[in-house]
Structure formats: C-alpha cells, structure tokens
Image (tube, rainbow, N blue to C red; front, top):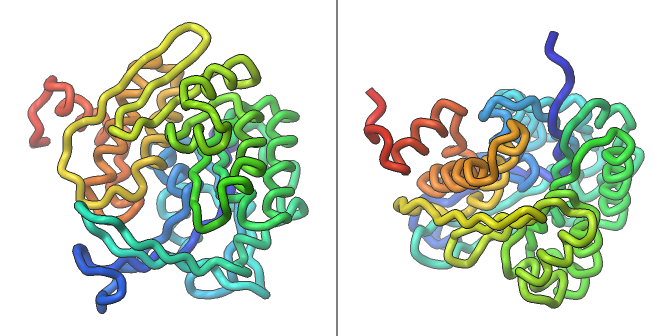
Length: 321
C-alpha cells in the first residue's frame, strides 16, 4: 500500500502570464497562461520524476487559484493541505521571455493569499512520515506570518526526523540585502542540505561562497551545493568535493533552471545515488527546462531524464525512436 509523501514543499504559487517569445513585456499582446512558484516547481519536478510530493500553501478563491490546484493535481502533487483564502487573491506573475537579453519579471503578490500563510495553516499531520522538507527563502520574505509558518515547518520536520533542504532563491524585489541576510540567512543555517548560487551565499553570509560552504558544513549541513555563475555546480561534503559542468544546450528561457536543478538533485539524493550521479541528473533536468518557455514545460519523467542524460554523456542516440 502506498504511504504518504516523501517530500513536502511550502510556498506561494502564482498564476503566470508569459508574453510571446522575444517580445518585451511592455509591447506584448499575446500571453500564455501557466503557473509558477519556486517550491511548487520543485514539487512538480519531483512528482514527474516519480516521487510522492505534497505542496502546502494558500491560493485565493478565484479562477487563478483553481488553475494552480488543478495543474498541481494533474502532475500528481498532493494538495491535501493547500488552503483557499476567501478574502485574498491568488498572486499574479507577468514576465517576458528572451534567450539572449534580460527578462522583465513583474510580481503582483502584495496582500495575496500566499503572503497570508500563517502557522495555523500548517497542521502537524502535514509532515507525518516525510523524509524531506524543501524550503526557499522566498516564503519567509513574503510576510511576518509566512516567516512564522516557515519556522513551524522547520519544527515539524525536526520532530518528524525529516531532512531540510533549502534554496535561498533570492528575489531582490522582496527586500534589500540586509533583510535577506537576516531572514534567509537564519534558515540557511537550519538546513541539512543547501542548494545556493554563489552570489546568494555571498549575500547571505558576507563571505565568499566557498568559505560560507565550509562554515555551513561545520554547522548543521551535511551537503552544500554551490551553483556557479558559469552554470557549473559544486557539491561539498565532509567527505569530498565534486564538480559538474553544464550540458551545452540552446537556451530558450533560463527562468526555472534553479528549481529544475533542485528537483533533479533531490531526486538523486532520495534514491541514495552517489554524489556525481545526483549532480549529473540535476544538470540534466536543468538543461531540459531551459530549452522550453515556462518554468515547468521541460520537467521530464524519470525515463525522459535517463534518455536525455545518456544522450548528453554520449552513450545513446539523441533521437528516441
């Protein structure tokens, strides 16, 4: 009999309106509707890779909220503990899509249902039996109540004996450097597994990324994965260091690469793969996502990941016949 989820994620998921490719946001007329949220992107990625995943969060009692829940359910994500707020709207995200120039991202999330997440919305049974809680720095930056809800999740994860993975996912529009360092920096030190950009580690700790990783490994963390500016990644543990180059692919849209990398890497860790293989799978999933427009279009199944990885590493025909 299938048990409960292996993984719980929690955060705000918004309705995404994505402008037609190559057209600046202020000139765009045609938009594609999708959903997006750092934590739900990871949940969707893990679910497609065959893991049992639960997303916890709040949406409004509106068509956007219905769309969010419907799409997560369609991907097999458990939304049993997702709440519907009758007084606040689902957040909205507008952005354009360019492979070779800066992308304009506009958030309409002030006062949203997701920002009104509070500790009382996180029942104790939401984390019963889970192996992993995945968090980002975005959620506690949304509001004081959302920060308190994040603290409750950490407490419940510790009580359940679950590991905590953390990706800062710094969004400068949510606050300044000092606020990020205070809010997300605290969670950084609560995590057992850290997935962070080198610039994020420097922002949150005021140290170089490698020095910050060493400090975290001296604390609670057993693994720190640094995502480099050149799109390579380095995994550090007490037992060693492993480097992973990016797979060369044409980039249609870079947004969502970090969440895809997290889903691929966490899947490998949940399956107890060796570090080099987990990193390779993470890079593979990220490479598939950046070739598509939305945050989730390119997220593969386990079979799709394995076919792509074999092609990337030269072990198979790139055409699946």
